[in-house]
Length: 322
Image (cartoon, rainbow, N blue to C red; front, top):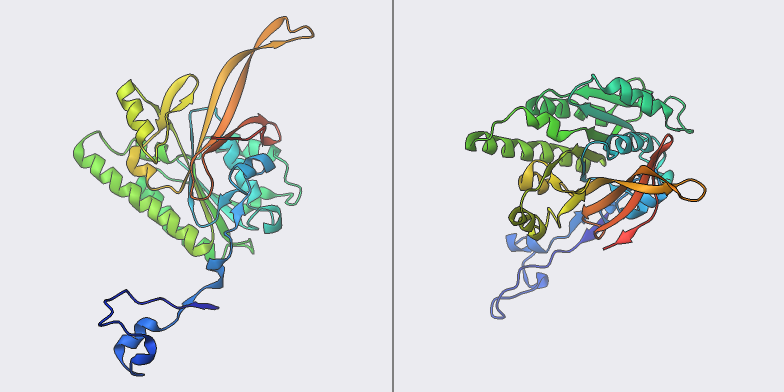
C-alpha cells in the first residue's frame, strides 16, 4: 500500500498555514492526512489481446481492462468473428494477453447461436481443448431484460459454477438490436432510451472497473445523408471524421448519447473491389478488403489497419497512423 499526501487548497498568505502549525487534534488537520492509494492503481492496466499481434498492437496491446469498448460496423465486416476471437483470447493466461477467465456472451436471440457455435469450435484453441465449457450464453429480449442479466452476472464475477474460472469478459452482440424495437421516434421514448443507454453503460463500466474485467458491445451503423450531417459528424469529437464502408458514409447507430457512453470505439469497414487474377493478370475477380479503425480511445491515437478473415481467425495486415 502506498500513500499520497493531498495538498490543501491554496489560500491567501495572510491565512495560509502548514500542518505543523495546526493543533494535533484540530479538525482542520484532517486535510493534511495521508490518503491510501491501492498499489494496483499505479500499475499499467492489463489488456485483453485481440488474438492477433498486429491487431493488438493497433490498440497498444489490446482492449484495456476496466473499460467499455464498442465494435461497430455494417453487416459482414467481421464483428461477430472478432468477438469469437476475443472469447477465446480471454481464456489465455495474462502472460499471453488473456485474462485466464470465463466469459459471458449476451445475444438478442439464441437462434443464430448454432452457427456461431460451429464457427467458434473451428477456431484454434491449443491451451483449452474445450473452450465452450468456459463461455456462458444468454439472450436479452429487451433493454430491461439486458439490465436484469447484467445484475445476475455479478455473482459470476465472484465465483463461477463447476470450478470454472471467474467471469472477466462481458460481451453484448449487438446492443443496437436489443434497443431497436423497444422505442418509438418521439420525444418521450427518445428520452427514455437515452436514460437506458446511460444505465446499461454505467453497469457495464461498473462491472469492468470493480472486477477487473473487459466489457465489449457490438453496434450497427446507419447511413449519413447529406453534406450538412456529414459536417456535424466530422466536427464531433466522439463521432470523429465521417466513416466510409461499402462506398457509403455511415455512423455508428444510437447517436451521440451512446457515443459518449463508451471508452473506446472500433470501426470495421469493408469495400468490394475488382482485382486482377491469373498468371498474367488477365482475369478480373471481386475481392473484399476489410479495415479496422480506432475512432477514439483513451490510450492510443486514431489509427487503422487492413485485416483479413480466414478459417482460423481474424488477422491484421498493416498499421496506418493518422
